[in-house]
Image 1 (tube, rainbow, N blue to C red):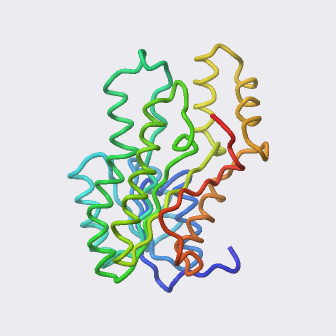
Image 2: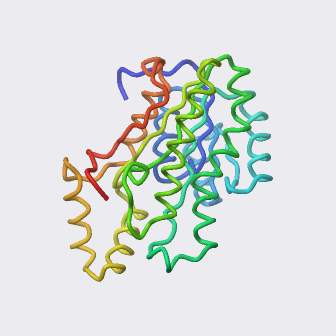
Length: 259
């Protein structure tokens, strides 16, 4: 992306960084000179990342598992020697269903990955960012962190939680010159969103095409967002151009009007 430059050899950890939005972020940051470490739960995705980016670090990690997160940060310390930025990208769509239909285990799993995982990673990243003298944290929320989302209550609850986590961290870490922002992607192109639309269509009893059109009609620009659009916002926030942006919830969504 022309016109935006990172500090040389900026050290960045991206959770769930081997596919989807995370992979788009990793690709763009590496293209712009960052030293990147990614984690993922899929060894096949990590193997593909290593083929594309030899020399950058990878770890298997479920961010909801404290022991695995501890090992992830040991890998980061060994590979990068420190940290300048954390991208809390890991998350799952969670179940689709009425609140009386959702299993408690599915609720907890969604909260654990989408929200608790950000806490587990941030608590270990902050001492490394402080040691670097400055830093940036980007937490992935969602348009569902701005609007209520019927039949997706655990996901929406987690993503609203990310906003509170972000704004609290921005206040807490600002005096240490650490910037904290949330990105709120909207309807992102790819198989995960296709699955969400398919499940919602089944829930309310309409064809996939009808539900897809309904989703697009809720976006002012009437189009989905690509992972590369989210990656561009991350690049901006990590660059010197974002040096005074903190505590913000930044929609990258074509202006989602409702969910």
